[in-house]
Image (cartoon, rainbow, N blue to C red; front, side, top):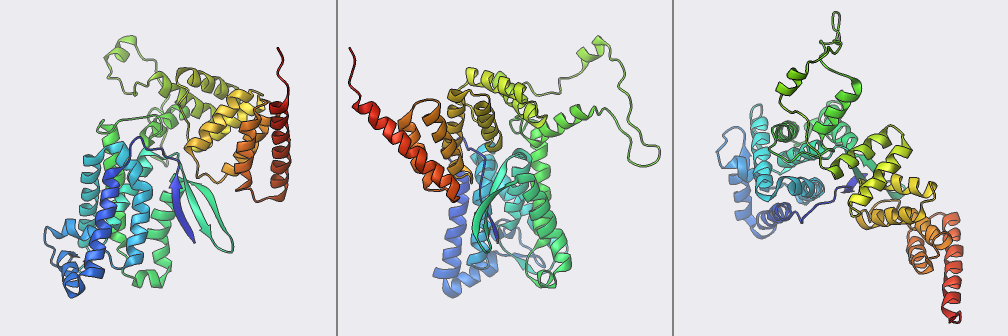
Length: 401
């Protein structure tokens, strides 16, 4: 069993609108399934979307009804995971409108070729999921894996959403699973929601309806085209070609509208770091990161990039900067699977290179709470004892005048 439980995205403000939608879904479920009795069942019948005889209000109300507790919990888990970040990026009111519109579009997509009723927030959440993909394509999702052992792993959002959630769960698996085909899962509503969420959020970025940054899908596409040297290309197959760029006159350049996003110095440095890490140019990445810290020491990169920069600083023996980078990682990604190992390494840096034995003891103690490998635990325990001994010796040393 694979359950998504978190992501790398840091929200700038509490996603109250998303929490409100979740709370409303839970409240409606309690009223219709636990408190309403026969009346609750009648409400579900009246407000579910009847594809054979749809009523206008049902395109909104069906989104807040659920078949059972498992249906509700599964939907709310995905809404909590993806909706908070999308809500933060869009803003409360636009997010609510986007969420409801995604559900309406999914309802229409289902009603086109169906005659049975539908209920559930899956179509709306599908729209939110692909909006998350467009706005945050490079982040990682933390997955709880529950098989013989229970552990967590990090999966790129693009792989999880595109290949697992959309292609496998909604297109490939149903074709080979008779039980899935016979189930009451509304795959057409899911796919319509995915289409709406991707297309709408991409269009909002393209036409400046949403604030652009260097990490969204539009920026990734733009960088890929620049790196590939693409200008114009014919369609694949016989006779297709890529044209060679022609010289452009200065007057022509001046007459063209500006297409690229104007980045702030901080945004430009973050993009440089991402590009240098992608190209394995570690020296350039270090230089750009140090410049970024000079401009704004509160900046934090994505989970993978932040950890990689901290490791590079440690390898370069820039231990003060490495310690600050590791601390930023721990502060901003406390749920990452490698936190115990990061605490161990940070404790070693504080103890062996920076003579900050109090910080070393703190990090080593916390590392021991999560380390599983015997070798790592032994190293942490030994280093902790040495740090405590040095700390005690410093406190007992006589003062010199």
